[in-house]
Image (cartoon, rainbow, N blue to C red; front, side, top):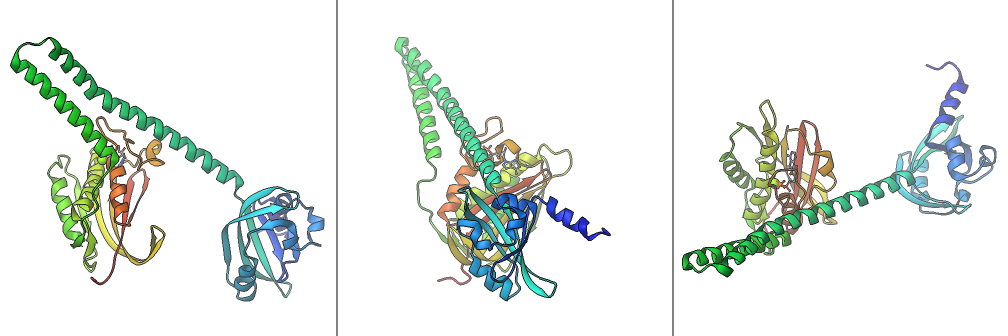
Length: 358
Ligand SMILES: Nc1ncnc2c1ncn2[C@@H]1O[C@H](COP(=O)(O)OP(=O)(O)O)[C@@H](O)[C@H]1O
Ligand SMILES: [Mg+2]
């Protein structure tokens, strides 16, 4: 415990967050140094000012703060508000309000932070990752196209001077094969082009098929744990497509676990989540399918662009698995996300769920 009251003031004055005290009319009673710096007003002048007069423009919901916090005593948070100060500077801030009673007077403690630096940093980092993903995509594509092209050119050259009919046929077949390989590549890049063929399916049956298929090449003895919620009703999905998505995710996990010295575990979990927003639409119920592994985690360099095509760190990997998975889940009005740190990787798939069949 600090003995001296002035020590607490010193703490407040040294906070990098802005701290302000206002009353029910938003008249300022106190502002710490960070606040006076952000708002461009001296700490002395601040106590004669109204909070509303600090701005040329703001999108802070003062009415809500007054209603919720000052009158009702609930905390209020606005994660992003745009403000323009009187001197023309502008900022994006986050702001929270809490009611406090000091010296028998009801006041509101406002805390705020400028998000300018963070937003700029996020934007720059996002752009950098996009660029690097685009470069990788082009490099990967070039590589995939050059190989069959080389084959086609070689076979055509041979064909030019070959008189033996059988040899000529072989060359022609090789050209056809490589051309098909290119077509297949383009098709895969364009993604699934048929609309999903949906039917009512028990998701646990789909998961059982995925497990069966993935166990076919489970050389490294990976433990599979099922954590199903048996009360989940049938879902309206394209079984083949959702199976393809899950199989790719489980296979990726198997691949990651093969690097582990100890026994790897993959957990398949199903749950119902209430009140979920998917594709900007509110759903009362959603199904979550989780695939969790205890492998080394997603490579940091891939994380930001994991769902981009041709993002891979595997020899001979196409990097298309998760890109296609995202398209297929999109086609189901669902959402796929990934969270990962060393020793834990989880892919969460959200699908809309109606509790009764129409
Ligand atoms: N469970 C996981 N653990 C670690 N890394 C993963 C996992 N799942 C996916 N990844 C990473 O994501 C990359 C992209 O996966 P994917 O799109 O399926 O393409 P591919 O399997 O052809 O590489 C993989 O190369 C891998 O580096
Ligand atoms: Mg894959």
